[in-house]
Length: 219
Image 1: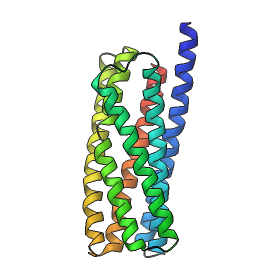
Image 2: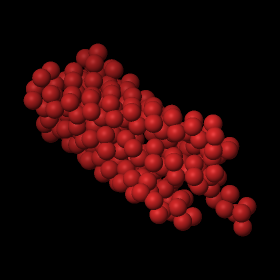
Image 3: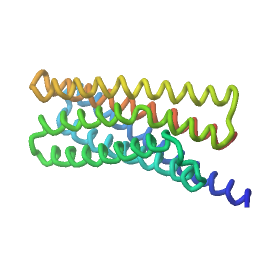
């Protein structure tokens, strides 16, 4: 029975790791598009494509959080406040990603991209801020569940704390830049910089979580 449970846990971790790698790759792609756009090469078109890419990254992240949370739920690890934080973070990330994808698609179709893309930047910024504590809570739940103590626990905790801080700062910056872009203060540049900030946060989140999942698998 223990062997079967271990196999299931390993399988779920492998799927989660794949999701975070995909998230990091998409974040890197969005970063590249934003940089090219800042070089004044089809800026609004590339901004719209980057918006869709980042929306997909948020959906990937929500799926990863959902799978990790689900593995704890099925093993009776739900009766603590952190579990609801993880569930809320998954929901916010998924809804934010879907909204951003919709705004990006409308922008590509030429429907007021100067407004919709900055609005997507604001949505992503808000999602990052609201989601900033999710991975920290989820990490604590997993540490307790897997019996991680000592130095490994501190490493996992510090990584989650660092990621939360990065997401919070990037989210607040993206919200500010999106608002300034909507009120027509150098909208093209500020929108692309906002996408750059969100893309960097998504890339770092995917990279850190992928390493964390690999560490958890080997522990």
